[in-house]
Image 1 (spheres, each protein chain N blue to C red):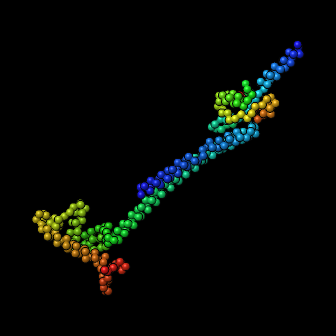
Image 2 (cartoon, chains in turn blue, yellow):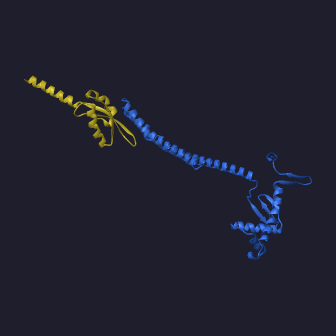
Length: 216
Length: 93
């Protein structure tokens, strides 16, 4: 990607240099007029010479216009560079996004947001709402806070935080039970939301595309 | 004797005349802004284009002019027809 952008910048840089080299300057007119004067032996009259001088001067005046053209073209070149860089960047971003989308599709679920609502006793995973018991909500909150601090909690520590006692006084199994309950309630709802749908008064159905099912 | 001295005088006069009556017309320029002029000059020494060039170049350079080319050399007979064209540069350098 960097190489591509560098290549674009280099190409447009070369174009800019060529532009500045190849555009004629004011002297081009003077040189033409001078050659005209030298090559034609009959161009010796006062009036004719004055005319040639005026011709050269008008060319010189036009060179100011040329300079402004040059500037405009240069600005356009810069715009073109910016646009091309943006295009390449977007292309690369698009490819990366596509790959990520593919990975997410294969992965099943990727949690982009987790919102714990204590009032409604529920947790929002992405856009799915799951109802939790008070105890499970407490466990999840403790885990979420620990995650924000990049901490790993043992079962005893979880139990200690929730019950308000010191971790050394707590049983490892008590924390493990809390985790099991959280997994059960959340896992149940997750599977029912993502995989096994319950259609009211009708029954149950796999919530997946039938083309992805294969049996061996 | 008188006749001989007269013919000698004529000869000498014509010789000096031939020496003096050599002119060249040339073109010169100035840069920034471009100015051009056509002029006529009297050539001292050899009556050749190269002699005229050598002689003109320095004289013109003193006034900031640059010699472009010398068109040719001619004698008195060609002088008058070029007077108008040369204008202020008629026999100036």
